[in-house]
Length: 367
Picture 1 (cartoon, rainbow, N blue to C red):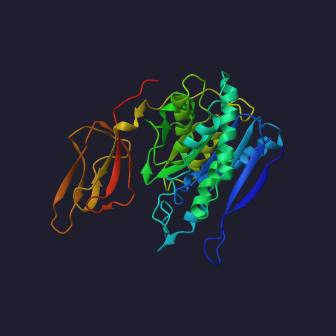
Picture 2: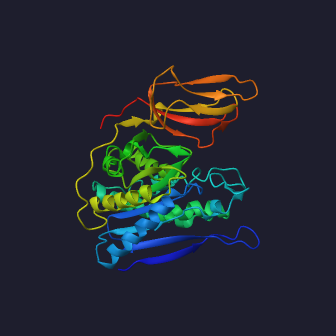
Picture 3: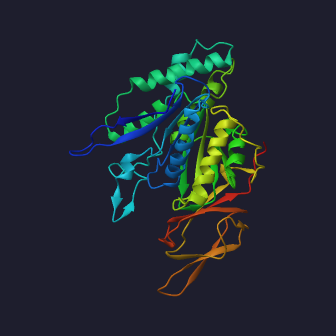
C-alpha cells in the first residue's frame, strides 16, 4: 500500500482554537513488525521533528518501491498543544499551562484493567498471549472518554501505538549528548538501537510509575509478566526514549545521519526491507538510571563550566562554579559521583535550588 497521511482533530479547548495531530502511515495495516515513532511530546524539543521529516521522506520512497515489509506509523509532532504555548518568544511546551502537568506524565495506566481482562484467558503460547493483551489494551483505550484536550492527546498517542512492536519517543534536552532511556524489560534487547544511533549514554531504568509514554508501554508488559508467572508473557513492545542531543541541534549535520540511522534500524528490525549494513560498535556501556545525579544550584548566579559536555567528572572534584556578580564570590560545583556530564541547561543563569545539569553515574549494567 502507498503512503497515507491523516489528521486527527483534538477537542476544541477554547473558542476560536483547533488543533490536530498529523499521522503518516506506511506499509500494510496489521503487518508485522509494526513500528511507531513520534517526536516533540515536550513541544519545544524540535530536533526529532526534523529527523522524522527526513525519515518520512525516506519511508515514502521505500513505500512506493514496496519495501515497507511491516507497518510504520509516524507522528512528526506529538504535541500541537504545547507548540502553541509561546510566552515572550519562548516555547513553553514541557508543561500544560492550563494545569501545570508535564506532558510526558500521566498517560493512562491500563495495567489493572488489562490484567483483569486477560485473567484466565492466557495460554501456553507467548505469541497468542501478546495478541490477546494487545486486544485488551485497544479495548480499554477505546472505552475511555476523556474530555480535556491534553488528556485526549495522550489517549490518542496510546491508541496509535499500543499494538506496536517498536515504540520510539524522540526527545532532546537543553544541551546533551545523544542518549537513550530504556526500561530493564527492553535491555539488552534495545542495544542494537543504541549502537545504530551512536548513543553516548544509555540509562536503564525500572519504569516510571508517573506513567511517562515509555512506561505506559514497558511497565504494562513487565507487570503482566510478573502477575502471570505460569504463562509466557514476552515483551509486546520495545519502547525507548531517544534523546537527540540538545534542543538547538536541528542542523543537517545532526538530523540527516539520525534519520538515516533510524531508517537502518527499521531495516534491521524487518519493518523495512533492505540491507542496513554492519551494526556499528557500541559507543558506550549501559548505565543504571539509579546512578543518575541531577544537580541543583547551591547559590544563584552564572554557571561557568571548566570543561565540555561529555567530560568525565570525579566525585568530590569541582567541574564548574557559580559566579555571584554582586559579590564576586564563586561557589564551586563538585561532582556527587564519578560519571559522565551528559546534559546541562543551555541558559547559564541558575536560581538557587534550580536544576542545571545531570551526570550519568558510573553504575554500569551488564548485558
